[in-house]
Image (cartoon, rainbow, N blue to C red; front, side):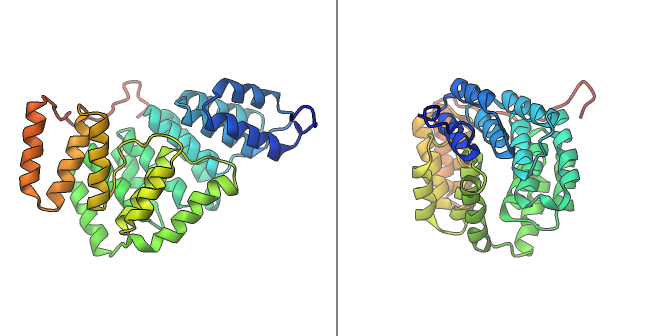
Length: 302
């Protein structure tokens, strides 16, 4: 139909076709369409790279963005966010540092969402000092920033530091409710303004924000609207988090991380009887909590 009506040179139409293929995980068709495009703007490159991530191909996503640089297309904040997410997925600190350099070059063009992605990249790559440096340099911090830093310390074997950051967040009276409207604006603009389909990480952040603000129904409605099966999303609200963890256990009874998540949620509410029963269930089903670990780059890139 596009060829028949000669729409193949219309950027917005071809970008929509590209997005359609990627949403349906037709990566080969999307790549073919992308290669045949006579003109690729920054949105086209971002859509293709973001789509590769959604299809479980982070290396392909980084390759697309590298090619984008070579042909001279100027990246924007969405390019950077996609690059950082790919680096976090691959735990590639070397590539992540390259993206950090780009963030510095973009300067004021970058918003808090990109800095949160940068913070998350360092934390997931096991470079907690890098994450802490980003966190300290942020002029503005959202609840996502605080949560990512807390989880970064916790996942990298520094629980005391995680508790310190949590207490600092409470002392600064960080309230999630004030970020709801801003969060929806960023979330919606990905599709409406930039032609990028939100990935699971984006949905997780939005659900987390809604849950912490007590907007239980909105959070659950968003989970139901996801175009893919949700993974184990971490929610601050007790009931939302508990339901999410129980739903994940129904899908996979051998996932230790979900038992730990549910145990922490119950402990936070001082429900010690339920914590004890959950630990007994872990013993009877022979589920073992994996010890914390950090990444070390032996090539000297860390």
